[in-house]
Length: 167
Image (cartoon, rainbow, N blue to C red; front, side, top):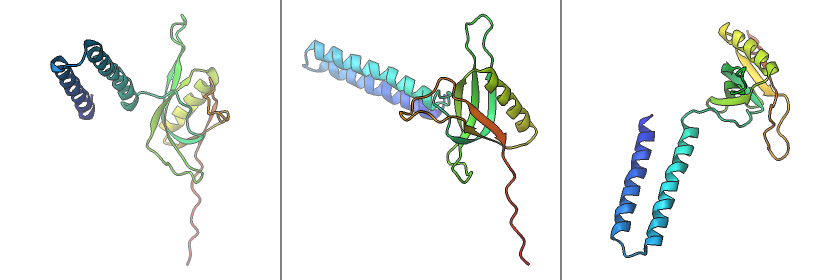
């Protein structure tokens, strides 16, 4: 855990202790006190789940429409059917000019054999020192609903055009 996470958890613990001590000494009825304690305890769960998303766990959200691939991990399905498998991509969104606009983020995509093969080829290219870009083959629907196995395309980034010499 990072220092920021420990500090946040400690601050919530201090606030909960303060609320508990104030509740024990206050003239409120016990149902009100119990409700305040239950709500505070519930927020501990909310904070825990929120922190999990902030600590670098991969998101199940769709990748951006255009991106640069930095790394990939293929988690094949379990033969006994216990684990459906997943493909994890560490990528950063790119704008129309090809410029990375945000820091990289981990994405978890449902496992498919087609995506497995494309990802394995892209990994080999990354290890060979090539830069790999990608794009969503199908954008999400108008409601922004994630498709179960949104296909992506991975390809080597073309070299930048050379600036003509003037002289």
